[in-house]
Image (tube, rainbow, N blue to C red):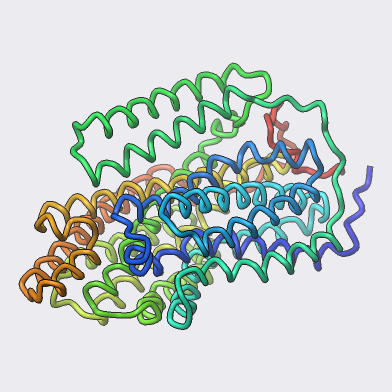
Length: 507
């Protein structure tokens, strides 16, 4: 059978790119708003971590089962419904009067995003020819990747002119444009009513991810041995183990575990997840450092992230050429060396360090990020047979997003623990509450103590991230190929794709 490409496919791709940007922006755009939200909503450090983490957690956990909705109800209808959820929850988040309502709105925002991402990937394969598909998927992936560092820059501009809710209202014009474009240009897909839902996998994965995240965030508030930390972490680990065992036996599994039989896919996904882990932790801490220690406002903080963004863009533009010249192993190894060196340099930050020092190490870190991410993504997805490309992309993206969620939780907890151990009781809620207490008491000594404690916590976060970067160097040099891997065009497709829609159009 010949596959006829959709006549409006390139216009439709613009709608998908808009949605991809909106979803990506919301992963990181909130970081710069945390200081003013901490004050307005009286949020402590744990709640600030939940503000960031709940969105990526629901996005990561929901992305895999969300593919079922597109199969059962039609992908166009699913996208339109997802955009309505995304728009309504953006409005609710912008005007949330309390931390609880805000966290609930962020969770709903994550659900909308989770419905959007796999449905977009599925539509790509039905709208484009096999020759056009890599370009279309690459465009979407590039938009999603660039949205992460650009989000704080956009957030900084909005916060310098409006209140913190504006970082969510910016979603509304994007949602309206995307809704009209989807309605006008996207084709509807046939429904697959007979598909079974892996309820066991859905329950176990959700329980595991929520429990682990809760336990990891609580580390910053309590001791490791506290039951409120150990209980959720042990329970989440047990649920995750049961999930893997369940998926191995399930007739229609939620996650196609046979994807991980390929070492290239597994190692590439693991390295990309490692990068996301460090990036989300760094982006959680940096804006707070710029505002609390360097005295920057929101716009000033976003401008101080420009070296990181510039380094990332340069690295991404050079990544493909570098991989062809010296091979993926050395290209990724070099990228990890750069980002590790940047992180360790950043860990020498003290209360006397200024913007210049931060610009140098964040640029080096960004350059390493840009070199690593496209190369490991290409290696992971390029090694799969064409029939598994869409499934692999959905699983890869879900795991990477989960890595970012855990990065914000774990590194945020490390920062909180180190900060709280070094300040008196009245300053422990957050660095901004500490500075407010110092101003109220007219105590320059307390303000210095608060800033010093936060910088100490930041340094520990960066040393920890640098250690993970060293691990990335070793894994890349040990297991990545010296030459680019090519997909196996005639390789048999996996027998089961579980819930994930068939991303390979009929040929």
